[in-house]
Image (tube, rainbow, N blue to C red):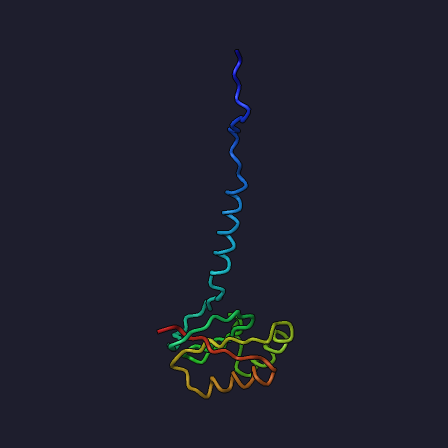
Length: 129
């Protein structure tokens, strides 16, 4: 008498659940990753209680010896507005200011005034306490 089971056990391993898990982990890490592009220039940023993350298209850096940089490119103080105009016309209109904490406030107001006159939203970069 030949007794055979009707339910056969499949020995193949399905990778579908494993790829779903990897895909979900990839999405999780992409959404929780920090989207801040750090400035490559040595600037001692001021501290604040709350530090929000802003996606930056245009970065203006003022060092402690009053050197001006737009997206890590050195520019003079007088050429700052001419350098910003084409960048702000194509970007989303967000300017992130990386200003050293020892720089006088009048320089901050000068740079922010230029960006505001070009209808950009100005954000000051800080480091959290």
